[in-house]
Image (cartoon, rainbow, N blue to C red; front, top):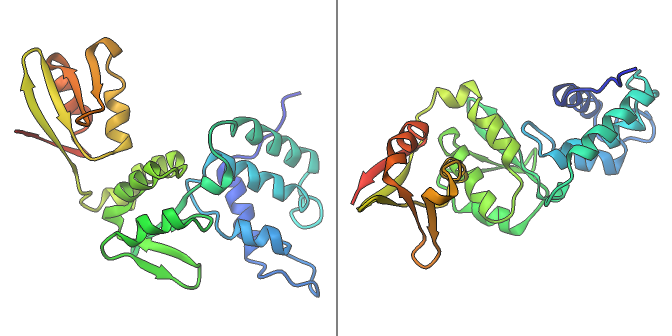
Length: 240
């Protein structure tokens, strides 16, 4: 018999319901305990794989008492996401986001390096109620890319942001890619951007080279038009 696994969206609904029962209170005996409340109140959308696994495992203990769900199903769900989360990151590296019409809340466990990245952003604000930072919607993807460079696990948050309808309504600032002709090759130089880097790495290894001394990519010229088309929404190519 195939195991029933809750989706990430279903787990987030359960999390919102538990958080809606308020801060831990021994007198009413409902909602998260103190440790779970502290961790799960930072879980928004685009959770990292390790954060999803952590959320599922925390919900197991509430499955029968407060969620009215089959405990074995919740345990199977926790096991599924725990196996999926194996990798280089742990949950403290995870970043999740909440995109609204007034800006995007960026949530993570306190990390001084992550905070320094946020503080360097123009028009960023601190939300004292949620104890998290808010950045303008047109800066979400650049900020997530910058957080990636300092060790944040943002892959799922980037995917969520890239497909969010509110972000498609704003003019996302494009990254500048400087290009220079070099015979059969074209040299590409740009600030770190994971999305651009991922597309370049789709080019066959023999047709791309990284120069660590001067921080640029050399790509066979025959791939330039394809790169332009693939990156037209996030990158602006300029000849130098």
